[in-house]
Image (cartoon, rainbow, N blue to C red; front, side):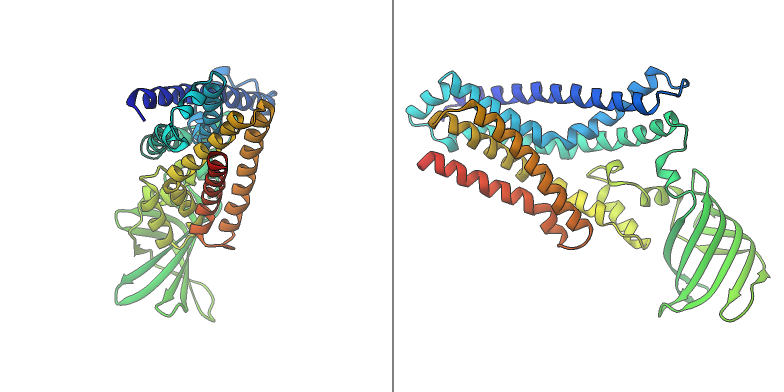
Length: 366
């Protein structure tokens, strides 16, 4: 296919992506603003500026989440318009196949996936953190990332110190916002076989360079009563920043930060299944957008052979909702470890891709 026709179809597709993305931005932003106004109707301390800032900080995450829907509807509208103006019909009459006029759109879809992964995900992660913090201020609380662990901070780390090899679990019932000062701390010491050796309770713990400093400490051995002991220190590789990262939500981490976070979290004894799913979902984004393009083109192509704009609109909306519904089910099964992580991530895109290819082959070759 000529460069002129390829660039023309590509420009039409990108134009519709921009139009639908703008419409989705307006709808999602308005819905979020109305929800904030409803929840904070009785709070006269919140200005409209703060509420608008909350909405704007959340928008990059929402747009990243709805990108595949935008691509689906942009493909449907783009090829429907090309069919309505007979441009697609003329191109097919002179021998241009569906594979040829779909190629520029598929290439642009892959480029959009690269932009989402490499550029948009760091922006979305950074603004989502600001959204959480400002939302907590608007609602009169503390930031979500700290409030979630304010009463229960658990850390686990291997220990090799003073001829002792094992591990310890640290439980803090209160923590400062910098995670450097902990209160009401219990430290359980285990040997290499996982057997409990002793327990230390401290009123205060300070995280210094490479060590925990415990003060007002009592020690409890197996079968004995607690006895006061001198202040002690435990070596650690944690820093306040590492602890903060280990408690982050997937939405607050970019594509670049997720691998480091997953390793850190699993080394600390936490499950990183949600974050691993989020990381793998970035990798399947190109296949997902390609599936949306092929599915949307298969609906639009039906118009050229049978007609029916009502079917086109209904099928596109139904496909979007079904995809969202199935994706949620498969992701929930992956989160519950009912199916392997790779299957939870790839099942829906592969299913949609195969369905779209079969429809295209049916309409193209009969």
